[in-house]
Image 1: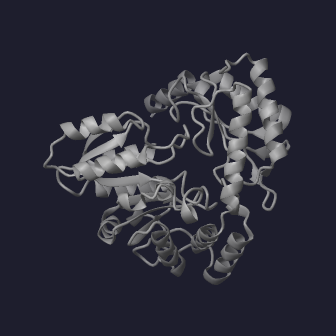
Image 2: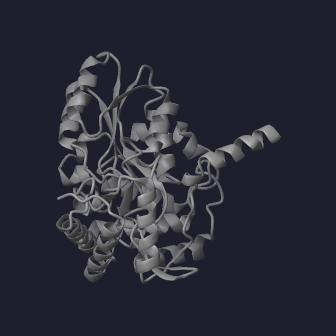
Image 3: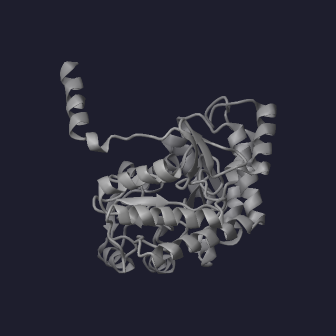
Length: 398
């Protein structure tokens, strides 16, 4: 026992500079992005509730009604007493949103990727999986657990993907996996090029639209739908925890594939289903955003404004293609110090992102100007960051 504990004592000592510490806060419903902390009220600049749907009256009303009608929890796994009317209605709505035959709900985006990929790339013999080098950890784990042979192509590099496809065994099934909007870099995958390669080489495609659903495309169907390519991607994976303001994840695609996921995905089978109130709130959010562009337009405006203000000041970002604003600091301690100073001096909370979420040397402040931030707030935030940037002597892009 002591040998075991001694190991972790040494590990804690050796990696103390990377200890994870979390800011305890309480978001103020009806006043996002405001939140309370033990030191007073702050403004949150790194929330994934990009459209503020977590406080939308339709969402909250749907959740309250569901609690009154169905109680707190779901009462079981989806297989054993836990499938509620709200789960079924939400799966149908999500399938319709993406123009797919069926959809399957999971308790998180991570479990949706891990569970579905372990099945879709794993139950078929000889599957060859082609995965973007910057794919999310949940994709990496899902493909690892599938046992499929993996080929890793450089991030968003269609030419490298083509080289790998061309060199692969032509008689074995091929499975392509990528994110449409990258979770940390904020750049957008070359979906038309990837769809063309998939068609040429007869590959099945799995598109992670976690940071796109609700925010892009008709009705919030995502980047592929915005480009008119939604029918070119076999399976779409999304989350309820970002634009829809709730929690949970899902995959949508051909019914035969969704049936296989329900039958074999361990992260679907062996866990308690989402509370009905969560599914009800998510359903209300999806339905609202399918009929409203107001939130999407506000988000797009705020993202363009922030990218422009940072560009004027020479503050570098990894990409300006999406609503994610990955401010490149490039040094761990400086990045953490910037985060601390923004919070202490300006009440602006933005998390410093370091390894393993990003490569060493690409540490960022992952800023997320949301639909509920005001124009004046964005100007004040950039002014505050600009002053701290100069104070700490961070490099500028001229």
